[in-house]
Amino acid sequence: MSGYGFALGLSALTLVVLLWLLRARRLREKYAAIWIVLAVSIVVLGAFPGLVFGLARFVGVETPANLLFASSLVVLLLVCIQLSTELSGLEEETRTLAEEHALLARRVDVLEAAAAAGRDGVDLSDNGAAPPSA
Amino acid sequence: MLASLDRVLVVLPAWNEQEALPGVLAELRETVPDADVLVVNDGSTDHTSTVARAAGVAVLDLPINLGVGGAMRAGYSYALRRGYDGVIQLDADGQHDPRNIADLLATMRREKADIVIGARFAGTGTYQARGPRRWAMRGLSAVLSRLTGSRLTDTTSGFKLSGPRAVRLFATNYPAEYLGDTIESLVIAHRAGLTVRQTGVSMRPRAGGEPSHSPVKAAVFLLRAGLALVVALTRPRTAVPGEAVR
Image 1: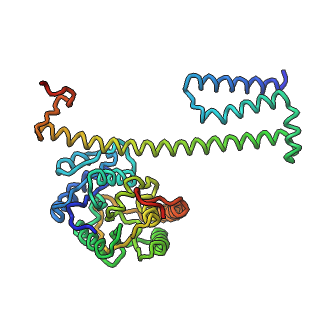
Image 2: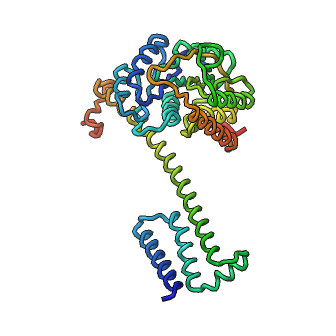
Image 3: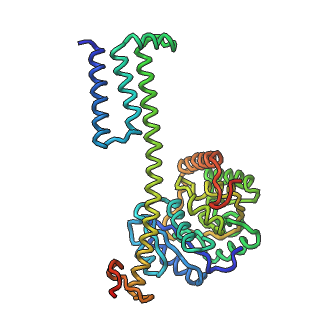
């Protein structure tokens, strides 16, 4: 079995797993995109290894393998940065939710106290769900 | 600008302050009996919320610890939604003297300021910092003084009065970053066109715990403060909601 065949099989497998995760909605497209691009390009390079040699000559890298290593490092770096920004976004969303939660909890406290005191003649002790009977 | 105290909300961000909080609240009731008080319990694991409720003040219970920035943005939101004109931020550990609140209000009225900082190095009191921490504070003061066109000697103070425009700005725009609640918020305010002034306040030793004097920690503080300032100065401007970007 040639090394290229092995790489091809591995990339194809990665592609299938990604598509499966997407179908099962366990991975959102915005995270899968970069991995799909990566897997597809590895499939292409595995199928046509001559491309790497041509590409390496074109960008002036002497050993084609080094080009592959370097570009995979760059891709991993980009993925890490993307994950960091998404994480920061999540933290900001969590923060906003926590603040809103605290503000609502305070309103519930006040409303419950008012209801318990029967202020304004409004009885909210049954959560205010039942309409006043005619 | 602000006529009286009853339109001003005193906000105390509190994280595990069950020891010091009752004393601070009692002192507030004594010195500013007309002011409404809000304790923002920043995800405390002790009885901070219970002791605040026992004192009869409004309490916001954040379900997770967000840091001072998060606690204060919740406080500003509360103030805005409840129609308060001003917010006084005061530490829950008792290091700020509520008697200085009157000075903050007077300065705001006299200088027509949107934000008044209670500064610890402005002649009143005996607070001292040394080494890299002192350089950091000096550097921050120099840069922010130049920026705001007003002498600011204590930019990391947690004792601040915010007027109506500042409350509107901070209710939606108050960073949770490290030092975001002090340095970055001042930069945001200045770039939104708000006026920042200061007045001297006395500092008291904290009721619990001592500030760190480790030179390594001070150096880290210097670096992080520098980074916070550079990032804050290079960010896009934000406007006070309802006003155009200048």
